Length: 134
Image 1 (cartoon, helix red, strand yellow):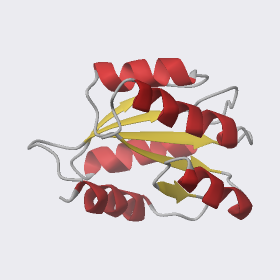
Image 2 (cartoon, rainbow, N blue to C red):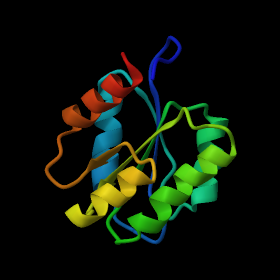
Image 3 (cartoon, rainbow, N blue to C red):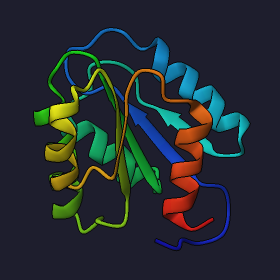
């Protein structure tokens, strides 16, 4: 999906009660070092807070991280709320501990990329760039 000029803007968020954010912080630094603007909203965000921040910050990408097993409810809810706000143009990706059997469900709900343990930050950045056609 082609976008305007300027650096890619990425919002990273930890929905729900998950309290571990080391991986998402590493990703934030890596994407920043690769020329993207990164906003990290912190731990324990609601889908509503995430969507509000994504729209306010006018981001191109929302990256969700979950290690708590709640990805099947939180990730689709964020996508649904973005759609209700008319922001289907925002790429939504997810990462964390996501069982293989949940990947197809999440993709059906509009989560375009799923990155589990072992995914490289370079792979994630390349996916974002390819999707946004940069």
